[in-house]
Image (cartoon, rainbow, N blue to C red):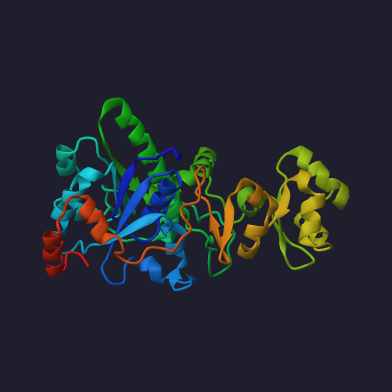
Length: 366
């Protein structure tokens, strides 16, 4: 049994943060029904790289969910969502502040009818504040949070992480908030409204650096922060096979392990020469007790002994999928087509065939 078996979630969100949050809920046993735009469906279906004909961002978060094709811009769409909401415990949305209210789906109205509903609202900058109506993406949120300032940079650019820090951080904040709200509801019967700001998720990740730098009254130069390029024994190095190694020898006991190989020199030049002398996997084995490890390529993840032992990854039809932390892999069957489950979900909610025909005629559903 999953930790959230029996919990039903209606997901109105788009792109990555909301669907990643509900993918974690699926991994804990929740049933998630996702609303997509008729026709093309969610934009992530079309963003490369691809798994077959489906974008990888959709494939990574779409398994185990049902898809409804509802055009939320049409008159009557808000009423339809209200009609089916009594079947759900959680509503997730990712619109700009005010859009849900304009559809007649504001939290006050919904909670008046269903006091136990948990409503998770994801937006770039939050429901309030001077930036609340601005558009944004992960890189903007990280910049606002200060999380790019101290990174080592070139004269023309600051490196961008290969993962979406604010988006996926916001997804975890959302999932944790939903779990906490469901726990509160078990005790009190009351639902909750969660105002999740993706920028605040990035800001939370930057909190230790913000505290330390402001306490010292400094804005460090790029590459001088200890854990962002400022310490030679906390960094990455190229090995003789053109692969890379990570070194995290912060404590003295780990540095002692390195000293025997460098003659006591832990400077950048000495470590560069050391790791360039042997292949990556040699150093990962020989210096494992010095907090040294490999930089794995995506193609190596599903063959890594640790990830396999933990059941954290699984290769399905040549594609590596990642298990939601603490949960299980959802059904690895085919991803849902756009609107594949529209009729089934609406019938379950009590709508008749005649009502579905009328909704189709009005182009509310497809």
